[in-house]
Amino acid sequence: MTTPRIYKTEAVVLRQRKLGEAGKIITLYTPNYGKLDAVAKGVRRPKSRLGGHLEVLTHTAVMLAQGRNLDTVTQAQTVESFAPLRADLHRLSRALYAAELVDRFSPEGAESYHVFQLLLATLRRLSTARKVDTVLRCLEMRLLSLAGFQPQLGRCVNCERALAAAPSYFSPAAGGVLCPSCGQEVAGARTLSLNALKVMRLLQSGSFAEVSRVRMNPALAREVEMHLRTYLIHVLERDVRSVAFIDRLRREDLWEPAAAPS
Ligand SMILES: [Zn+2]
Image (cartoon, rainbow, N blue to C red; front, side, top):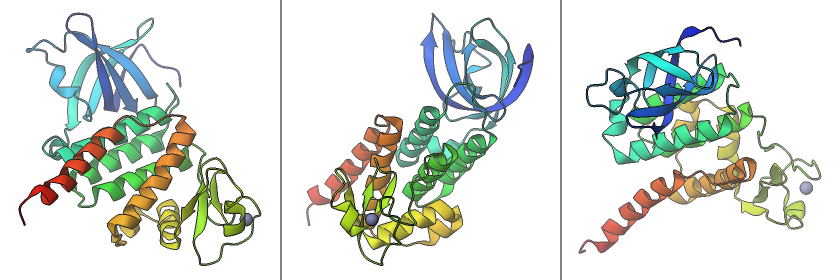
């Protein structure tokens, strides 16, 4: 899309970094221009009119002036601040992970209205949902599909035979599920329980409401998370940094009850 010299767009702030004495470079995800970096001058000054409207995870409406290298934010107005995300570390850690994942999946300037809508829906769900990790699994599966990396879960990716109602294998390198006999032959394939396969299929084809209704015990939730995470690392060719934040919060939660006197 050709960009006019001055243009207005909605955006979600994915991340920011310092620039010079008081400025920042803001990474925005927009519905029509995809991901873009823009300069925000003077936002680190306490009296800046822009600063509060360009915080990470804010849904904002911005006016941008096209520059030779980077565009400059001239106005910004918060549309949704997602305050509940900032008031709860568990929600915040998931939202930061969501923003980083969208960032990693999006090449600069590749427009995707669907990704923008998905990101907004994810931040809204993370603000209110009880099952915050289910929100992330939906995001992961949907982003994989939108990026053309939808894992094959219907038949064995190797021999293409239909899968029996039994444990099978999942292989990130093969791009999906392997039947028991093929799975044993493929290096890096890990066992996949039947319930985890069912949940992954539902994540792929069901709505968020349908997925939310599924009751998952912690072991099943961790299994689905582990398979999706290894697949994401394979596709992105590296880990997503914010995962460490979520893992640390979980470890602290697990540690506290054990340390309490019984
Ligand atoms: Zn097979």
